[in-house]
Image: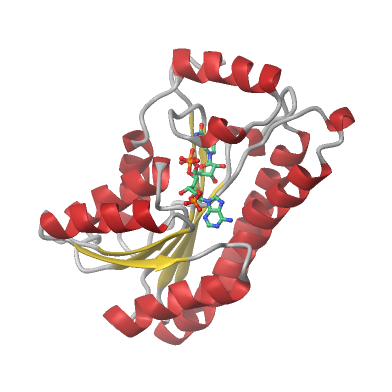
Length: 247
Ligand code: NDP
């Protein structure tokens, strides 16, 4: 019996660190061809070299998800290189948390551009191919913060609630094309996500908490595997997970 991962062509945004990187390594090790997107070329090249050295297949497309042409190129490259796109993982995201009253308006813009518009650009690039193939799977990253609001998370939560709305709306529309959609909402996972919080007090509080309870990025890789590896007539609509110790 096939695991329904071997041979699949899987595009991952934000593959240069954290959960995107862990998913890329895991899925490539199970025989998927992975197409890696993010802005940091050196990190992507090193990851692809590791995967190829382990007899896997990986292609790098340096790309910024806030640039629609970049996202289109990422997806087009998957199809040009491997002949199709089976799965898109809309993973790229940023979380510069802060209380609204501190008016970090540039960071609000960045979260909306990366976390929301980046996901929409991914869908815009992949959907025509998947409709044509009459097969595909679009996985998008929300968060526990896409289910509840906590200190400093108003804008981040707005983007992650939004991702859930987009993914569920998409699910309802694309059934005729045999396309699956999955929302994955992680709790605290130890990655580089907190490094970019510019408000020191907020960063410290989050680092202390995630340092205590956070689980490794490989946790996410196992859950992506679970969603993809279901038979094609089963769509895992949503996964919400927390470290056992998380509130
Ligand atoms: P990381 O910071 O380790 O990874 C984020 C990835 O997004 C990096 O590869 C980064 O690459 C990429 N990225 C950021 N901005 C852009 C951009 N403009 N264009 C393309 N890629 C970009 O964090 P995580 O692995 O934790 O984050 C992955 C996802 O998980 C995010 O959507 C995050 O919101 C979500 N999440 C994380 C949680 C956690 O506890 N860690 C909890 C809940 C959700 P580069 O800088 O090279 O472009």
